[in-house]
Amino acid sequence: MAVSRVWFVRPVAGSEFIAGKATFSGRAIGSLGSGGEKIIAAQVSLFYCQNLRDLETKIRELAVAGVNTLIVRVFQNEGDRPYQFATARYPSGVYFQTRHAPVVGDVLGVVVRLAHRYGLKVFAWMTTRYANYGFESSMGLRGFFYDFEKGIMAPGKGFNLFRQDVVTRLEGLYGDLAQYPIDGILFQDDLILKHNEGFSDEARQLFFKDHGYDPHPSLLYGETSTGDGGRIVVSNYTDRFWIWARWKNRNVLALAQKLMNAARTIRPDLRFAINIFYESILEPENAMAWYSQSLAAARDLSFDYFSIMAYHRQMQEELNLTTIEETEDQFAHLTEKAVDMVGDPSRVLMKVQAVDWRDSRLLPVEETERFLRIVGAKPEMHVAVVPYQPDLPMGRMIRSLKRPRAYAKWALEDSGMRAIHGPHPSFSPR
Image (cartoon, rainbow, N blue to C red):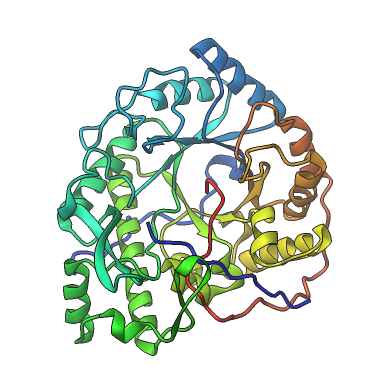
């Protein structure tokens, strides 16, 4: 079954010291830790509790249900709902002690203590490029994007990853995070550069040094047209764009390695997962264009796990799948191909969607279970239910992993390279 895609456009909202110069920390990659335990995780944006007694009750209930790992949000973007059992001191910042960002409250310490009391591991879910907390108005630290409508470079959202002071600040944040007795860290999906991002002076100068020409937009983008709402749609990219995209990818991965090294200097056994867009598996060229992301390149670094954002409702809409059966087939194909690309199922963590991103309502439990059962067919593979909500019947959902739905060999055609129209909307919390 060939897959067609409905294309969307969304508006767009960091150096020699990075490119090609990251070093490994010397630890083995892909380790499952003591006993090789399968991760069965709940990814937590909120605990939905008012006090610490309620928090302990929620964590205990998750442990009884069969969850063995919590992936806990430790960042607060302005406008996000804060943890209700903590008094927020700032509108944005982090939930652990550090001198490199505003501390909204020290939630992580309490969560780790309670989780470990009930035998649960904790992964801290943390931002990178968007971790410019306290520096949102510092124009010199912001990245730049190309504004197609105006034809100019403009300051964008988040840090300029090509500045040494930004990298030093992020290394300090991740070093402070490693001071806690956490079991791992998940890189949020902001560790990317979209197809029209990364145009800071520092990035362009370093690219020029490497390749001998300035990555000016006039050299990168092919035909454009006006799409819905009067927005500019890019129909194709030039050969030089792909050189630029791969260069950005190498720099982003080198930064990730620097942050892992900074944390593992303090905690050598700390495990790392990175969020991977499903396009990186089904449509690698699109992922490189849209996000400067490549699973093939990332697998050679010291990430322990690749966290595949396999959100089936999102895939169904974006890939123009018309039935739940087609969506299951594509999800199964994604699962199989992820293992093939990584080379080891014990380095793959499949994230299964349990909530409709549009209205935050729970999906039918039977629907979510269908996709959990596909993951259950590979016992070495890890799984996370995203996002945790108190009404989720976690025990029932986890039991569905023990009723695997085995597929023989996925015979789907790859989605392949389609006409590229720029990045499409993302409805998930990632």
